[in-house]
Length: 182
Image (cartoon, rainbow, N blue to C red; front, side, top):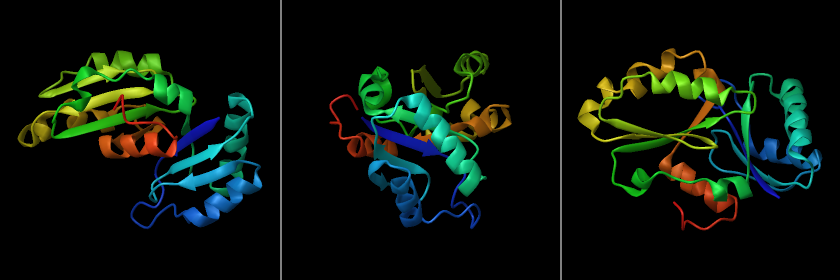
């Protein structure tokens, strides 16, 4: 099975540095195959036949020992990525589209309840199985959006990992999937 492992907060502002070549080598040493990364912001891809629970526990131990600043991550199997039902508006020409991926220990139901209470302004959300798809219509109203004004203040913010729509498409590429449903 092909997997994407998405983590947050690395190589930002000179902090929490991880050399991608070193990461690839170390993950290969853990027994994973066809290990790749995409850009320097926490997008790791690999093949494994291990049960997902074992992969999760293995990476928790790996990060704790090697990169303790990586506190959580999202693990996405290619089959789950392919099965994700995107909102109709995902292909529309919005000024900004992001996916807020649920990480492995996050209570996604709590996140959904919290976001459903926010007052959306010139934006739209869709709750998927892998995360929250969030679209912003106009740049001029971005500073008024709940995405900008309220998201950072939420207790779960450090437990999600965000990718824009272009990176989302790249995830499909690295997972060996077509763009038919993007």
